[in-house]
Image (cartoon, rainbow, N blue to C red; front, side):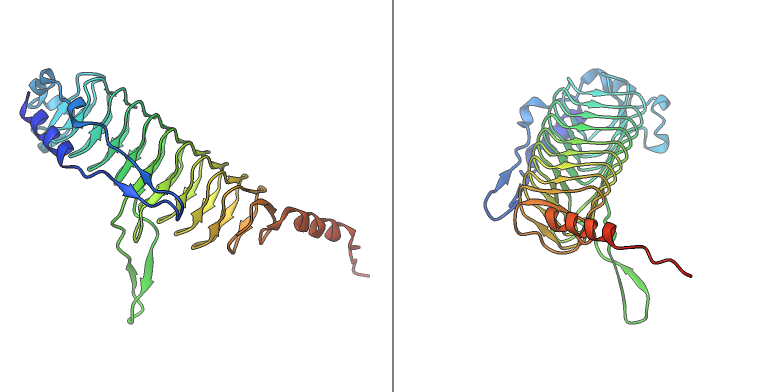
Length: 294
């Protein structure tokens, strides 16, 4: 076992299991893979002093991964079956589980955990997050960056609010290309098991999304919204900050949720109302004669 392997195992053993109360009715426990399954190939340590890894003055702490040719930090904990492709970088104190694929150009930032059989596409950026088993993260996704939080102080200056928490992605989640998921500020940002997210979706800080949700392209969810289970959002749906949506709601495309939705069912419009009320509104507008200037 190399020094890098020893440090990686020590990190994995000391990592606490993330626990989150997703809603009032159920607790989700995300369990990290057992540390005994993680190792660092001893053959990869021979390249630690090589300049080919492109890490500049930090090359002594970065090494070439034996399976795929990517680069990893000596304190990272990577299963020997994981593939880190050329151009990908796994930074310090990250954990990569068995059968994980990390595509070229992807950056796995410090303190990221990727569970087994998850596939990460090209040019993806991961930081401050835990990703569950068998997820698919497509090209260009950004997870775990700071949320958009500011306030104005007494002198009129714009001050950034601390964004110190993480993103937790459940099992069997699929996230489309160029989607962004912000880290939390006062609670973790959460995506529940089996949820599917399309391309170009924005999920703000502190958002909690339940299991088996479906978010179509260009959906935007503002910070601190809470979404139940089995919620479907059509393309370009917008959800205001601090809004709660109960489970088993379907939102028509281009709807805008401005207040809590407390009853399951279909909704549409701006602001979103029950689908029947929205259809009547549309029909009444169509019947209204158009006034023409003389």
